[in-house]
Image 1 (cartoon, rainbow, N blue to C red):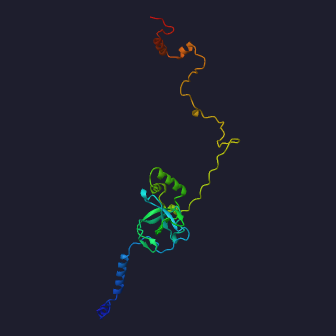
Image 2 (cartoon, rainbow, N blue to C red; image 1 turned 30 degrees about the vertical axis):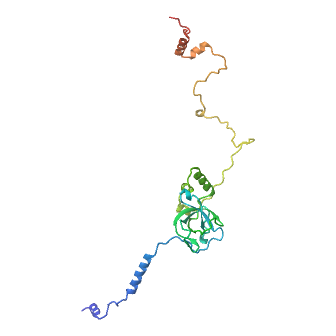
Image 3 (cartoon, rainbow, N blue to C red; image 1 turned 90 degrees about the horizontal axis):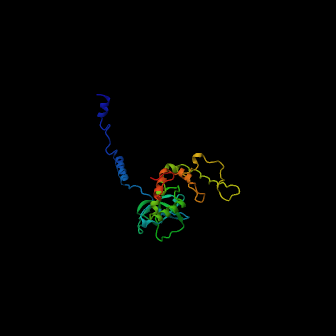
Length: 262
């Protein structure tokens, strides 16, 4: 017999102890089951979180194109989002939360929807409990006062909602472009030059003549001035076609000049 057979023949040599690896396997199975039962992470409801010290209310335009929802809604601004939640940025808010679903001083429930912060306010006109901003999508302001006023005018003119107009007016988000530093704004254009001694901003007339191709040319034969001297019959007969003279003589009943009657 070999040495390996002798070692394996010994009683208890190489035999696993009963229940040696059972605790580790059982713990691994329990951990796997626990992870499978954990629900997906939801955006924060900021239950019990402190609000911003200054301007704790954000007036938000939600991305709902329904006409009866074409208005602004107030949301609470958590202290953690105070620096990024500025007017003009994109945010995600909970919309449709019931007024009775209040947990920890915050309204919860409803679905997440995109929106724009219009302004920050010290207090809200709504007397009930406010829902908090879920999070700030991007701290880059994309909706300025001029664009907002123009979109509002377009929506009022064509009987549409402000949210529908902003979907076309505001470009979609591009994370790569937002990560790059913004360029400096262009300087204002210089004022137009004025001619010396003139009160208008037009440039002085140029002395360079027009090119020949750009000069206006008459489109037909110039008309005779009715106030000028009458033309001589010989000149009129020379310029008028021969058929026109015959037709005019036949209408008047006479014979054309220089012809003999039959």
